[in-house]
Length: 478
Figure 1 (cartoon, rainbow, N blue to C red):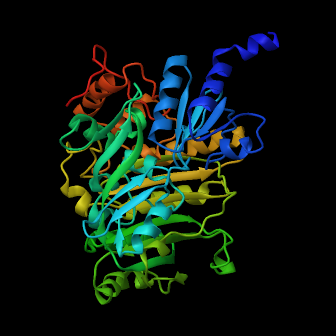
Figure 2 (cartoon, rainbow, N blue to C red; figure 1 turned 120 degrees about the vertical axis):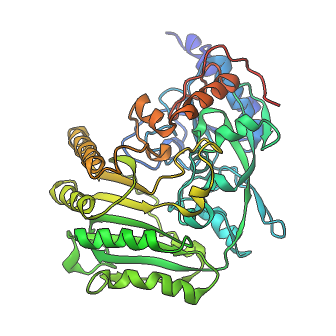
Figure 3 (tube, rainbow, N blue to C red; figure 1 turned 30 degrees about the vertical axis):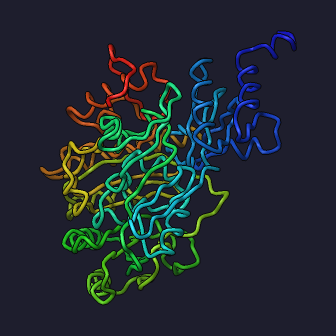
């Protein structure tokens, strides 16, 4: 191919068109910032986009979407870049990078906020906390609010205030035809239903209107206990019995050589628990958390205290890009048999880091109807994520087998754990069957119909994809 042929290729002409039309930065191979811009949170994805467009506004988003559609270019959407399946990047396509869209308009008296989707959970939380207000996201500050919201959002306020999507009042979405739509319960209600849990299948969310909750302070932090089966089962029992103001995340794991952990526990199994009591009474919060301390003869680390909500997010290393595999599931119970299985699998793996993360659900999340949003697993009691880190492709295969067998062993335990779906935001690249598990029964068919209406050619396919139903017209639903 001659130089003239290359300059006339659709890809090259598309990049030239992008540079001429968008207000944001267009980064291409050879630019000094290209390697930094193409990097996502998780390691193991060495992909080279043709261009990365750091958009500035919804108009830029519309331009990029339209150009990708018209030229048949693969399109990846990046908010915080935390996709476990690597959907935030592409080989040879365009990355639409939202990270510079960070406008946040807080209505303190109305307790709402319009937030652009380039904001991270940590940035949003710090800004709203200055007014004694909060919206619940996940447990990691650097996650982009776009991706976590579209998937559902299970975090530190899940039992008190529900999923992130339960606080979404409206959104602005650029659909596959490049049109910017404002969606809520009255305008495009089917699309509004679909984006609350259906992932990035239906368009690019540029802004969300969130409900804010009064939250001047919390009681919580980190509690580290030894991880015997009895202590694991007792921890879960206490978390389920606690009032819904308390949300917990219990990471059963091999103790890493971290400075806050005594050297004698390094390499031993521990429960590293993150806890948040989101009630108004500090003394009551102290009483609710107190029963967790004596589950062991003495805690290994006790950092539980009154604090501001943003303090719950641990500091992160900017250059940390872990390579890991995992499985996600919902269980009805974790009693002694399940706890014994957790200890067995974590003890026998040779992975340098392996974990079973246990999140007790219920409360406000469960009071929303299963058909009210695209997140259908409202009655789930406990979410479990098992993961193992790896180095190299050969090791990855071994870890994947371990994670699948771990999952199957847990699901075999007891009559209540016979398979209960998955959380879409914690899926890796695991196939259509696993995506269907995230959207049981009629939820899948309804999402497919809406996909067919708003994205009939499946432009937005770098996600946990829902194929468009055939025969749908590309029209709005009013």
